[in-house]
Amino acid sequence: MKFKTGILLIITGLSGCQLEPDYAHVDSTSLTETNQQRLLETKKAILSLDSNKVRTLLTEIDVNAALPDDSRLLAWAIETQTPALVDLLLENGAKVNIAGGNRFSPLIQACRYGNSTVINALLQKDANVQNAIEDGTSAFHLCAASASGDTLARMIKAGAEINATNTYGQTPLMFAANAGNVNNLTLLLDAGADINQQTQEGYSALFFAIKSLHLDAVKAAIARGADVLHRAQDGTTASQLAVYTSNFEFLTWFAKTMPSLLAKEAINAQLTAYDRDGYQLLHQAVKANKPELVGALLALGANPSALSEPSRLKWRYEANFKTQSYLPPQLTPFEIAEKNKLEHIAALLRNSRGVI
Image (cartoon, rainbow, N blue to C red; front, side):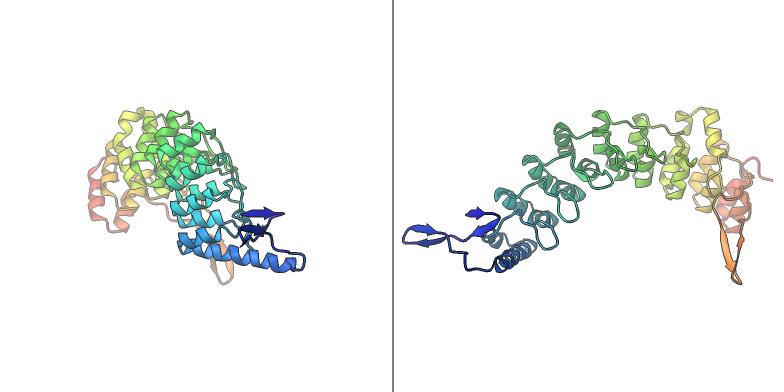
């Protein structure tokens, strides 16, 4: 196969000789249209997983040429998540560091799916692990969430920056934590990742682990030194974030584990802190109808008669085309239980000390 100025030269066998056709009398526009047609046929064959047809068509095209939407054939092969097709294009000269119309490099696209076989095939061809999209999120960030530990270790060896941040201040460790990927979280920490590094809004990897709803990831972060008392810039604590994300499994574990993690003063601060809705943890546990959590908080000394505070959120409603401020009613945990007819929880609160 020969190429000349980016245009395929069709080789014809004649009496044992190979001759180039005379393009002097052929419209170049027709050639471009023919090339685009072949590229589109190859794309179709890739999406149909027809490797034999792809192999044949690759002899007639430039494997790195742009399709009409500026995408590349390698990107479509990666999209199928079929390692054999990816290998076929790489064997035929597909370049691994060309970004398509969406500005994603092949490695970034592969890391979005986390298929380690595909990712490793690209790394074998020296794919750039530092490639990133416009917001600074790199292939390494994405792979931290979903690729295998072996692949992640290979990227680190290839020069991936452990504590690299994107525009939002998010690190690969945070991506692993957000995915609840304990193996990669541990690997990154062993490689030197900072467990308490924060985003621009003050969120640490622990917050992302809580958001993931994977208790094992939270436990792993805390075991490696995550600051459970840290507050984000808006004042949100780890336990309050658990409320906002309905991660009551973590809250129940945390309430039972607090005595071994925190001093008495710190525990009291956790129990008496008001969240953005104006509630303490006990209010939220009652509202969510979580009797086990209610019992654990009461055992720590939570006050069932503590009155909620006005919400920090802007509550508004419209009536007769007028807008007026609205303040939710201030209630105690016990009153919330009675209002919602949570008799079992109301009994727990009544039998504890401090109910008026």
